[in-house]
Length: 117
Image 1: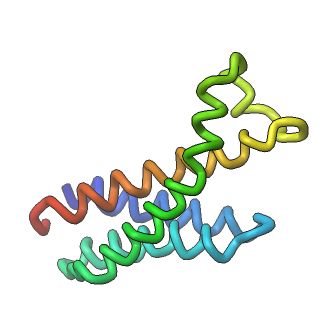
Image 2 (image 1 turned 30 degrees about the vertical axis):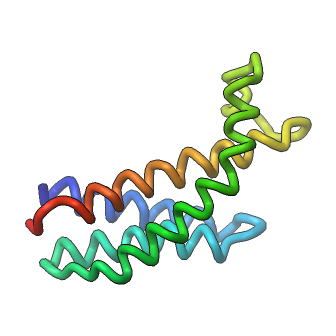
């Protein structure tokens, strides 16, 4: 379990670093960096349910705000549009963000409900 936790911590750290060139980096760095920090702390045997709850709340707010765009993407006929440029389809960027947030939410939920390493 520790290898998986550390692997996800590294993955979310990389996600946070990639957001440095995003037009709105602060939220994304906090979300992905926060997820990474929580997992890194867990790797050292530390758990803080308060900060995990705060991070889950911030991620959940993002999921709720991007869900309409993801719904629009799912109802579109162009599933591969998520892999292309976002020039004419505003919902593509939000759909990508939705997917990242859902991954973060799942990882945080698993962290919150499982026992320490």
